Image (tube, rainbow, N blue to C red; front, side, top):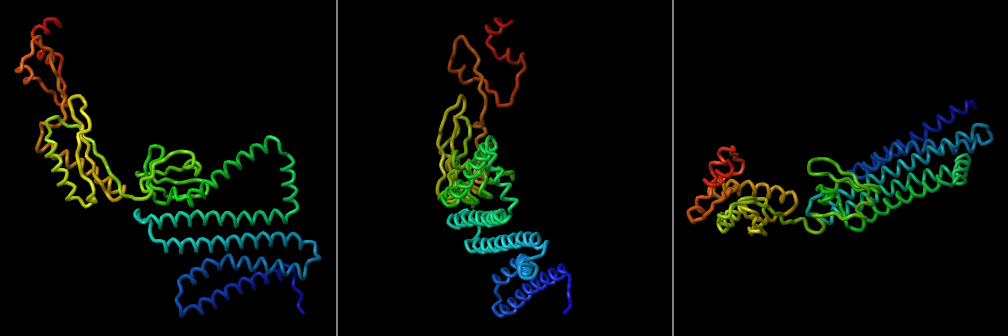
Length: 379
């Protein structure tokens, strides 16, 4: 019988094991060709590479234990193969978990604002996927440390040297665990979901990503705000799509007191009726404040979701400004300047000079507007 060097034997065992896995994939695809199962095809594709590595390292480890257990180099090679087997197993588990997550996400539909149940399920699926992947790799590291005497000695020495380093590690672990449990609480407590519209730290945007340690908020101008998950447990925030994405929006306008409010209400109703962003629930105007020479009116309009509400507010504001300028130019906000007079009369009140916002007067022009006695005092 032909005697081969040990390293060649091990190489042949590894190649044979990897080829065996490839043949299994080929036979499986041929067997399922009649059914045309896309899911099965994706499973075979995700499992091939880690399966080949796992079969090769596992076969080498078994071959060494059967035929080379008494050699000097067998222990070191076995440890290396153990690492490869564990890592490939975690790799395989990660790929299969990712495939399961993608399949479940397709099942629960898109991230539509109105699909609250689907967004909740997808949030939970994403967090569980991250948790299980982290658990798989943690188990790999734990098993590796358990089977390595040197690693056990290092761990024992670290535990022995507690002191300040131990306190710092405990504090770090406390923060990490706090974020971990906060992430799980966010996913399964239904307080926050993917694509929820929130206002955080004075910024509004969409929840783009929820992990076990941080949350990414996609701000309306495409910036990203990254916050620890514990932030949402310890601080208040606004969730515009908690139960119903429909919102009321307000537009504030400063106008002259002479604006016909009833006519403005009719114009607002006409503007929103022609706009597809309006959901038909609310469209009203009230006079909310009188601020100096102006009155402040509040336009209240409704939309089906925050995006539509924002755009509708901007379009309504623009349309109402155009209407006021075109039909009631005297109601454009202006600055009134009342000059001092020793004896006021109705004629004097009616002739009060007006300055439009943005107008400027020279000192000579200002003096010419004062009564005669005031000009003498200032000269």
